Image (tube, rainbow, N blue to C red):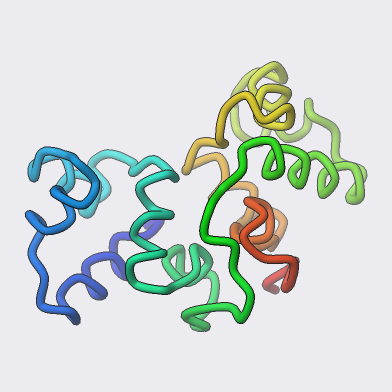
Length: 151
């Protein structure tokens, strides 16, 4: 489970319904329901919107930590900055693009696109990298500078 436990918990804690978030994200309510139940994986741009709404970290939503929010958070995601952060982190840890691609069962060119900031990393890919290496999703996206590692 990526995020559905906390996503539903946060929504119910505020006594909000799925229609509220489907309106906020400009989605059909059924689509939002599929995201919340993880029948489909929610794109990061929507998860970040929800994190900002609840004032929680992506690490909290992913259940990597019980800390709801970090002190200094960049609420906007810059694709180029996030890509560069991913690249710097990968090189610092002596991990090749091929190794990341193999972990994610994708092509090296996809990793290259992420690192060049051409596109934002897919939710599931980010999650898998964080789980495998114990690195913060918020850190990799450039939302925070610390903590870098969660384990």
